[in-house]
Length: 355
Image 1 (cartoon, rainbow, N blue to C red):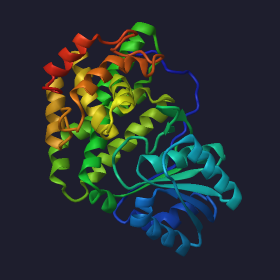
Image 2 (cartoon, helix red, strand yellow):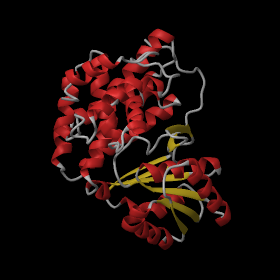
Image 3 (cartoon, one colour):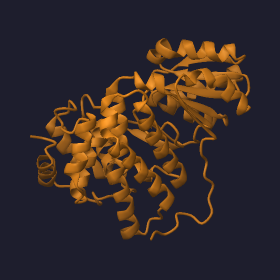
Image 4 (cartoon, one colour):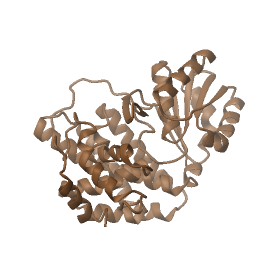
């Protein structure tokens, strides 16, 4: 059905995926099994450091692993350079990224540039970059996705994730459901531009959407261990990107819409929330069953309108209008010229994203 993405290629994936209750306690054992050494740089932010960082540091040091905690302010290239300097000064053997997207992305690129391995420890299930080789960092005025290396291990503690703010879990589900349209964009580009496509990557991404869609009520119920479903989906989505060698299976026109919102909204919503709204809009353009997608999102509790996401109607329209300029090299349903103002209003109104 598809052209092969590459006849021969290198695919890097995590060597170990550890998901379960009290998984933090297994860190020293995991590090020993992976032969990473006994000196690590733990990258996190202030909030997570206060909540979990001290505990993780104690666990590591009780396992005879000398640990230095480094607090980041934001996910920027300057921050990465700062962490590399700290790493070289300390002579650490490996890096640990603890927290949400920002600490993990900084740890990912820091370790890549320093030619060391890193462990990804997510404390919220808000995005699908936790096990991917892509690092999303703030560049000059906008956010860029940079090729790095996937973590050697992902350690996800469901006890922590079950009790994390539900809004972030909803955002993670939104990032997964976005694959509905990102895959359509990829296949469209394959047909029109003969862009190579990976059937394995497509299958993995489709599985993640199915997993979230079929368990929407269970996720909403907050049953014990519910975060395992979301985390499994996020990890699988990361692996799909590893197989593809790019973010193509997980990022299409809906992500371009979200990045456009980031650049114009005074107070952007969470990445996954914006991607979810973008998915509804792009599903309409792809002539998919956008109402069904919207229904699944409503069941889980993902914002499906500008008002629910705390966004302005005019920002939705403007983001729709300029989304095609975000990644002009990536062909999507938006084409080269994007939507006119009138078409953007029509799409947003018909999908009930704006009143």
